[in-house]
Image (cartoon, rainbow, N blue to C red):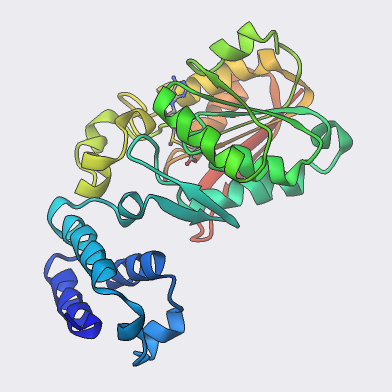
Length: 288
Ligand SMILES: C[S@@+](CC[C@H](N)C(=O)[O-])C[C@H]1O[C@@H](n2cnc3c(N)ncnc32)[C@H](O)[C@@H]1O
């Protein structure tokens, strides 16, 4: 079949299934390594570049996108996050564009030597995105990354190795692995994008997320704050004086998390940061 005929049919199908057209383009470009402009300008030589086998593969994956609502990133097995190509599978949350900013906020607020030479931990590392981003930013730092999912750690380890980053991966619940490593009062920074969606809302998420992304990565308990409370309450045992703490949160949680930090009494310089859409997405603080 001619590529353009196939493409035009799939544009219509995408509309019918209420799936954004850019996802079709994304999958085509990912699999074919064609240029975006070729697609936009409907370059006549595209058809020749796409072999029948490649078109069959593309079609099979795209039909899964339409019928099974599988995210295109899982179908392709990879995603671009910041300047990183990362492998993803249904064992890990697909790293989101809005999370990219967390690295820039850390870089801006942690310019002192204690941070650049210190020990950092990414709690709930998933694909390893944040830990790898951090390692590329803090070349002399010792980076640890923790996850309770062994399958996620496998992917994160592969991603770190693909990017030639030395990261210490440890399995366990939040601070447990750090206790075993005797890292109390030793960390320059803690970063986390924890599960923060209230349990009842997880069941109402779009099918792509609800049926395909790991619930361990999403479900933050009854009010969404179970894991955030643990991160607020236990982090002071592990951070050095002046140590930096930052997490991502959900729309509407900023003031509650600020109150949790204030009530704890061990934090100062509490700051809320917006994402690219102006949503209060991150909150940072330092240990007294
Ligand atoms: C929202 S995802 C974030 C993944 C990745 N850091 C990112 O930003 O794309 C949360 C991660 O926390 C992990 N997680 C959930 N509960 C955990 C726990 N008790 N201890 C350690 N990790 C946990 C999940 O497996 C998941 O990888």
